Image (cartoon, rainbow, N blue to C red):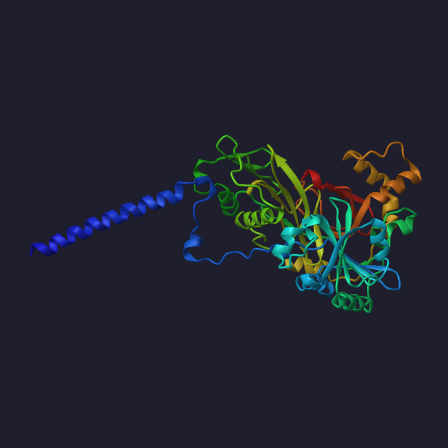
Length: 490
C-alpha cells in the first residue's frame, strides 16, 4: 500500500517544479523589458488584430496629371480609371532585355515631350528607386540605379516607347527607352480623353508668370461643414488609460501622471525618458529620448516601422465614426546625434476629400535607427449620418481659384515671411507674381481649425494652397483665410 502514496508524492514534487518554472518564465516575459510592453492577452487567445494598411495603400501619387492631345489638362483623383494600378502593372511587366537605354535628359526636353498627349504620376516627396523596385516586384534594370530617388513617373505619346522620371532631390530628368510602345498607357490616355473631365489650367497661363501648377477655374461641389468629435474628447475614460498603457506596458504602475490646469494629461516614465502628453483637445504627443539601438533603415523600412507602431498605439482608425483612408502626405529626412531617420507625415481622407488640420496633422511619426522617437496623433471622429447630411445638398460653385489667390496674395506673403521666405521690398504686381510662382498645388479638402475648447466643432470645406512647406487654408466659397500649417515644423 506504500507505492501509491510514494507515486503521489513524486507527482506533487514534479507539479511544484513545473509551476515554479512556469512562474519564472512568466516573470521573465513581464519584466525582462517592461517598457516595451510584454505580451497581450489578445496574442494568447487569438483575438483578431486590427487591419493594418500596406505600404502600397499609403503610398499614392499626390497628383495624376493628364495632358490631352488637343491641348488642355485634367487632374485625376486617386482611383480614377485605375490609373496608378495600370502604371504599376506596366512597370512590373517590363522585360529587362528590351530596355535599350536609361539616359539623362534636360528639363527643356522633358517639358517638350510632355506637351504631347501625356500622363504624369507626381509625388510630393522622393521615393528611393532601388527599394521601390524590390518591394513592388519590378524587374531590376541596368541604369536605373543612377536615378537614386524619384518623384515623377511619366509617359508621353510623343515617345511611346519611353518612360520618363524626375528626381526632385537631384533636380534631374531621365528617359528609359524600351524596345516597343507602351500600348497600355496609350489606351489609358484615350479612355480618359474620351470621358468627361474637369478642365485645369496653368497658373502661369492665367496670371502671366512661369508657374506650371494646374488649377481649375472653379468647381461645383456638395461640401458643407461637418460636425466632428476629437478622438479623446474625455481624458478620464478607460479607453484613454488603455491607450496610454500601450506606450508603457506592464511598467504603467510606475508611470507618473500629471493633470495640468488647462486639462492636459501627462504620463512620464523614469526621468522623462518617455513622455506621453494628451491635450484637452484630444491631441496625443509621445516622445522617447532613449538612445536608438538599431541600425539605420531605408525609407521603406522606416515606413513599415511607423505603420506597425501606429497600429499598436491607437490604431489606424478611431473606435467610433466613419472609416478614413490613411496616406503618406510628406516625408522629411531628420537627424539626431548623427543618427539619421525619417519624419513621416500621414494624412487622412474622408471619402474622396483630404482632411487638413491647422498647425497639426492626423499622424506624424519620427523613426531613427528603427526606433520611434516622436509620435503625434490628432485624429477626429465623424459620424456617417452627419457626413451624409453634409454632402447630400445641392451643388454649389466654389470661389474662383485665381481670384482667391489675387484676393489673398498679401496674406499668403505674410505667412511665408513668418516662415522665413524673403520677398525683399517687392510690392503690388511684383509681389503677386512672386507669390503665384511659389504655389505648387491648390486642392480642396476639409480643414479642422485649431482646437480652442469649442462645444461645437466642425470641419470646414476649404481651398488648400501649398507653397514651400506651408499649407494655407481659405474658405471654399468665400476665400476668407482660415489658418495654415507648416509641414516642416510639425
